[in-house]
Image 1 (cartoon, rainbow, N blue to C red):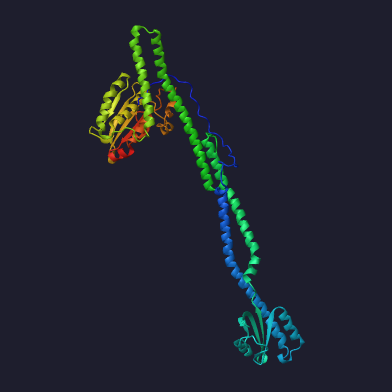
Image 2: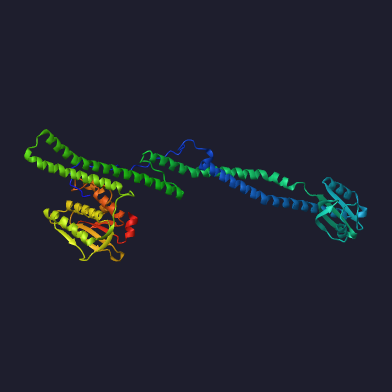
Length: 491
């Protein structure tokens, strides 16, 4: 956990700039073997055609009866007009003395499949008309509608004439009116269905194009192309998808850049003690070290080996933090006593470097529920970081206090060192972030300490934050829970 001083390192590898937007090919399938019926375009076209077909059928069901009734009404009105004309012609002279004009009119109507019945003195000139109809016309009443004539239901228009006479025109109803109406409607209905299918095809292609573009971009991201960007275009849902993919690509590029930097820094940290160990080992093997210098050489090799061991342990701990079986043993702990133990271990080290160490406690126990070994590991790491950067004469403070009504306690490590900027605080617990920023500027460790501390505290159900200390440097605040259940669920 504690971080060690390092030797100067090679120049920092610069982070690559944000790549420009790269157009995404909009044609070509993302994966082979795609069945046409399973594509979004095909399904949208089928759905639109189904909607258009249902619309056409509903329109036909509503329009055809209306059209049939309209055709029958027109036939009735036409028959009524012809009945009025016949009555006017026959009214010129008495019916008994019809002239040739009346006979010609009757023959002309019959050629139009209109039957003409003449009523004289209350009787029809030929059988077939229902008796009530004849009676009503002879009584001077006009009749219009449908009646049973000669055993067939027909359109009837009857007009009364003076003297109990009258004229009755009948016409058979149009055969298969539905068929006639449908013959006139099938072309518009078919055109509507075709228009619906064409509109569905265009709409489906328009909707599917951004999805195909996003799928192509995702495939390129999976292949390792982090420069890919999806054009942002309406509607809002497509724009949100494009923003999400572009953000994912940027986040992956940033994450991979940080991983590369982290690996570079870790490899350097591993190489430094290995180089020292190898150099002293070669010197011992070649016999170039004097006998009286061997103990000092052994101590140097041992220190470098311990440094290397700590670094490897930190790496293993970081790798195991997210594992379910990470070893944690939370128990009731007095944070005041824990801080007093840390003060006894660190006050001497600080005094040897001319750094005053101060312990601030409330003077009473501060109970919490945590793993004392892990919390002590966190404190040692934070104190090691502070002691590395604080100049002689500037203080290092370890403070303990209760966490108010929430219960639990707060451990705080403050120093009078150079501190952090606000931008540093945002990335303080990311692996290697501060190490990369300040390598070669001031003393830095491996870049793992703060990330490991944050991971340990969160696994224990607590919280850690970085800020500015009143002493002028950095302040790290660790909140430890008092509820055993919180610690167990976080672990």
